[in-house]
Length: 125
Image (tube, rainbow, N blue to C red; front, side, top):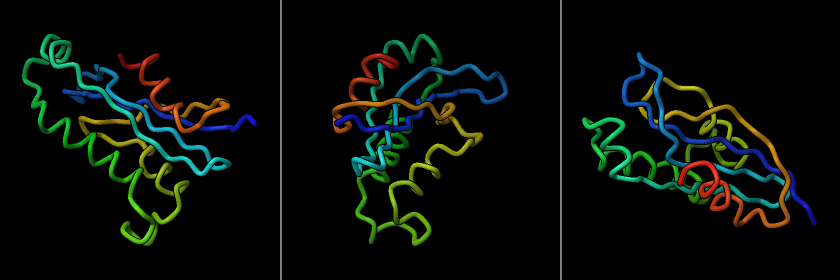
């Protein structure tokens, strides 16, 4: 059975005023499959060449927080974010920080549980 899904690419934007970015992760949501996943990868060498001033530990902490929001049981998150769909909407909302979601895209997959890793390989690594 094929499941529709939505995803955003997480972008590292070291200087918001310049608008330059580097893809570092993806968030995938499939309502029909009950899936909300985040997958990310920090390539230290690539980031050092792109933005030498990058604080890699801070970037990893931000990405881990996004993963945590995806994995958190409903009773442990803010009352306004108890469903996966609401969390995806919050995670995919535009923001002016160093970790920004790109536009929302859609697709269809037979295996929504592994789609985040597939997209990570295709769009980040």
